[in-house]
Length: 418
Image (cartoon, rainbow, N blue to C red; front, side, top):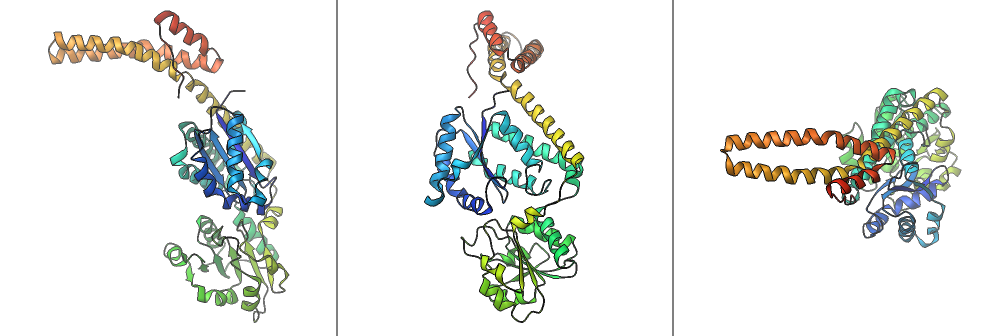
């Protein structure tokens, strides 16, 4: 198995509860700030979604860096949850590559094939711009390329599945078609855009939006929704046929929709109100599940009702992931030859530049320029095959012999690539 200096640690919905993932997500900012101060890692990317909390990092040493990362995350968590990192899965080297490409392809999601994961991977890479490395950027770009291929070339991606779509499908099966209904959206974050698009696609055009952080008006300015102020929230709940909540962690653990608010707002409403809670940390008061006039559908229930995928589509997606991993590893193994190729070219270049300087002293500018062009062209032609051979030997495990030959024949010492 090829050695790759990338490690992934974290938890996903397979092993962690939504409450545990919410606790980890709330500590994301503190984790990033603390990791920036750790010398054990060269760079890192944090992927935190409603399905997972995973940290991908580039480090020269394995055991020491893993311990440093897990300790940093534990320190960022509340004392009563500091043991969570002890449950983390660890993927090292090639296994970390395989895992990230499967995640980007939607194969490891709560809803297999969900279409928002690509955006989440892209956002994670963008957010890590100040503390990532070239190796991590290449890996995440490879994951994005593979995810796009799965989305465009398989039935797994063509359905445009998302947690929002599955949740709203559950609402429709349990209550009524969404088309023509009045919906109230709680939250204005990135996932609110997904929910809004899904509601519009289903024919729901009467949409209100409320944000405890006061961003409803700004959201409404760029989306076909009506902003709802704090003083209008109860009336909006009373008039709604459906409430979809996805505000994230803005409420600091305090439910946006309390049981008392829902009970008071729906006291005169004859119809049952479906409340689809898609927030990781829970926007809806757990006590609301006991209300007679409210049907709360949370992420756990959405996940339990996620549709089974067609075996052929999953197999096709996995084949694309395997090809993506092979392509990435092929390119990375060849990249190991870069220091040797750089050293060889630098060695030859110093002789070429001396001859160019001598030609400039002996000849007119036009002739000297022609000599320089000819010398550089010849040197590039001569070095082309040795450069390709270096990459081939790196992939085959023969790079040490190549570097030894450079030292024996030309006295070239190859410095390790930083």
